[in-house]
Amino acid sequence: MKNRISLAAALMLVAMHAVAADVEVRDAWARATVPGQQASGAFMTLTSAKGATLVGAASPVAKTVEIHEMKTEGDVMKMRAVPKVELPAGKAVSLTGDYHIMFIGLNKELKAGDTVPLTLKVEQKGKREEVSVTAEVRALDAGKPAGDQHHH
Image (tube, rainbow, N blue to C red; front, side):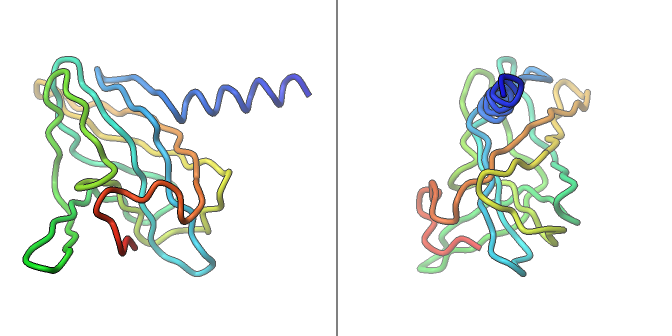
């Protein structure tokens, strides 16, 4: 029983806070899905002490993982893949509203309470590094990103 509690506590800490490649990751989570749903999103806050660029992501739960941007153009909310997101030195960048990580072609249903492994690809001064993140899967209605009225 004590080992289970320790493991659960360790997983929660990893999901809440990961640091590598000079990038701090806080409150990483993924949205749960319903059976047959083929896409979902992951959300988090990234801070780079010296400045870096998020240039990609990968996860074994999906065939494709992309960085997405959501913008309102006129009265229409549009989403598109972007090649990178700048992480200015010392500034927290939220991947919970305008930007997020998109899982496309899910290999399995994401159930609340599970965890999702995610690898962020970060470039800093011409060097590419990977940041391993464990994101907690949260219920469908949890923490909707700002301005997200019809997230997929």
